[in-house]
Image 1 (cartoon, rainbow, N blue to C red):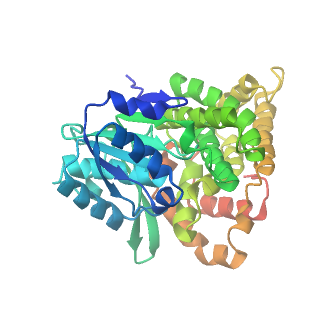
Image 2 (tube, rainbow, N blue to C red):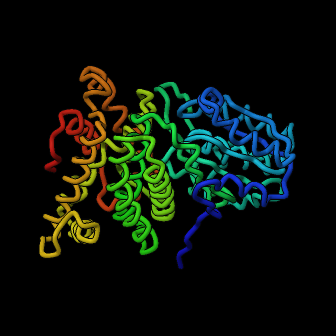
Length: 394
């Protein structure tokens, strides 16, 4: 028996007006300083003011939010006692907001208690509204909170999950993404591409997620290059925003795997934006799972997906069709100038850290969802192949 989890989703121009439908009056907003600096917070607070709602803002969320930040935000939330928590921003504010929601409703719990096998009973004190200001993370749809923890060996990313942490409502209003910088547009767009591409071959793959992923691919393939060329094209912005949400729904119900294990570790080690890391690793991860000597299942699934997506012909073999899909990913990376690994770090940095990074990849829950397993040696080779921009042949 399967379940498909999703928040109530409101999308399109002026979707922010949906706040009028909510009776809750006391709002706790979780965001970051960039949202404040660029005035996006004003769009939200002006609406709240018109609706005669009260608000309190926590704006100290950093990229790759740390557990100390989450605990600080939770304390402020507990003191304010809201009936509506609003996450405004990219993936980081949403990851913080999900955890804060838990600790507000369940102050008896800690970060290590965020696992799937307990009942949280969220929603008794507050609802969680997620308003994304980037088109890619899909965090407004998912049940994960990615939290950075400092250890003696360096930073690691905790992948804390619980199905009850899915936001109550997701509001997709293109007004919040119309001024996204082009580099951020490319990065988050490839975050969404990684979500849909990994989830369709995950061990938890399912028909609902595959359908969402197929439409998301169609929209990203068409509209990401348009937005990257002209960020003022609001139709393209809206379509890309919807695509990112659909990719989030797809992977939130099917899960990602090796690319996110690699990406989380690389990002935590060198503080590189998440979308850049998982987007960069995508072709190498797909090649690795296609080379599985023990199963043809991935070739069949990805090959069929490529044919349905229109990047391969129906008379292509499964393997050739799947390779064409990988080639299309590489083409889109070039279109939006997505950097390679050797543009993110030096060879010395890779050599000094690759052994530890490979070990941390083994600890990632995402890695367990891969249709082809990987040990520390395989992870090391994937890091090296990505750095050298070599096709994966193992």
